[in-house]
Image (cartoon, rainbow, N blue to C red):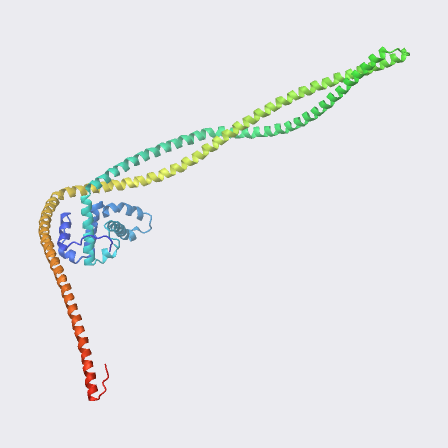
Length: 442
């Protein structure tokens, strides 16, 4: 039945135990149990310890039957199954591992008495552990307070969720406007990037043209320096043909004027290029500011995504808290019912406490007397055991000596036997020789 040992009580003690708890039974009922009797006794034991009765199970039974099409068909079977489930839990706690419906509907006398003994043993143990049960009640009170705190936290989360939904509804037009503005800014940035690429190409071409003009200017300046040196050298010479020199000077003057015009034009182009470069720098600053604005918008979008994710997490948390709240409500109802049943059981226990105390006192006195008698008998038995042990040791010693003596005598007899046999053989051989007969030795 169980690997856990507990005393199997005789029928009178089983009857006394149930009578002490206010449940009247007779020795004949315990000796020949019926299905209704064991069901009533098991229900009383279950109520004595846990406070669970058919009335307590009626509400969950009705809730379960509400989902069926024909509740009248299953009501009685479901009630018996729930009661059997709780009795099996009680039996498992009492170390009856193989308790089944057979023990309810087809009770065997010996097994039923063993189950009664286990239940009585377990209930008495719980009564002796009243401090532990009180601690469990305090823990139950703590659980109720924690459940109240969880309920308040759930309400606070629901309020925060509602506020967050309102804020989200209020921010939704702004978010839509920001999305549209972000799309427009993205289009402008793309256009600015295209324009920037065109400007960069223009800048590169202008830089190349500027470099060419600077090189041309340097070449012209070098030529002008060379021409000035030639003029100075020519002036220092004696001139044989002044007219030709005048013509050369006139042509060189025209050339210098044209080169000055080219230099002026190149300087004007240079100023135009510098103006364009300054404009490009301003455009680049504008593009950089647009990029920074886009980064700010992207950061705000990430914040918005994080807020939406947090909203989803809050929704999941709210759903989970709602489930926990429903479970805690059911647990609170069960705890209230158990508490009321426990109060009733406590009142019954207080009513029978004095009787049980007196009975326990008498039992203790009887057990003390029996223990003293057993102590005296045990001392007498110990003394007798010591005497018997001393006698056994003396008998073993005598047996050893006797065996030793017998062994010595046996050895002497064997020696005499072999000696006598040898002499007999010698005599027979001598007699046969004298009579002329042949004797075969054995």
